Length: 445
Image 1: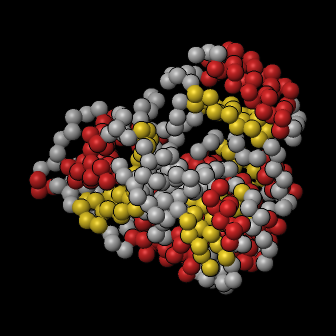
Image 2 (image 1 turned 60 degrees about the vertical axis):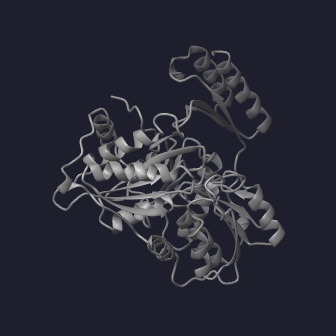
């Protein structure tokens, strides 16, 4: 049975449009409270959120639903998604919930869940929550109602956790950083982490007002960070997305360094320290240049479906510790359980501090192939595999690219879009071929 509400990364959509409504979140909290019930030690659920204004509404609704199911609730306030995963583990909680739409604008919001181990939920658990959503909501007897409290020192706990992933023998003294918090969940934490490790930190995108999350700042809008790195003469710029599970960097020359390149830098640094990774997990969208650069170092790359949950599943299957996406979801499984922008960035600046080399120098052995990405809006219910014209055109393009490039054609997991990615040495050809497939899709609706 397919899932009705859960996508590749929880539940997400426009605020006020079902299911991203207050009444649905009330019922979702109740259903989750039932699923995560732990009679032997009591049900305890943590709730964190990013900085978008609708978070207040959904936090209250989830809290009410959980309490009605008999769960004890701890409110964390604005916290990065990976911080909620870490605190769920450290508090021995039954589950963690994050209210966030990640890199989307403030008009969207969503819900992500972590289990007691700080991992994304399995399909079976998500299906069980959806099954309960179809049942009448019944409040437990008054004597069994949960209570809610607030963890006032949550940011400080996470700051220390992040700092402990940075090597004791190293310092960031003498390194000038620009940190872009996307007016999001890292705004209190990231500047403190890097400053306390010795860096000279200038901060942008750290004045959230509920409406400006990801607006012209952050990992999906790096222009402001690029300009600041150049004007300040910084060694590196670090940009997070709204909920802090992604990171992109800007090198000293103002060029953007994406998740593929950062993953290569981290893998190569481990290799230099005698801790060579057996392999790295990327995705269908990972640049062929990363695969080639890793292969030159004797490190294998395998590709998962797009989505950090699929990256982590494949990492566990192979027993590997590094994985990530070009978007900047980078998982260091020996340090934490999920994609963590701050921790990934710390591994990158540690490589710079250890080697004395610039970020440009550290990534210089990786040569990215040009990629063209086009998103085409499609009607709800459009099934890519059932469209003969699209399949015929994609087969023609794959034949043209045989041995020198790649085509990836896939539906978005969060929006009614078909994503077309073509990778090859000739950027103009990539664009022309991608536009050809896009035009076929557009003619079908």
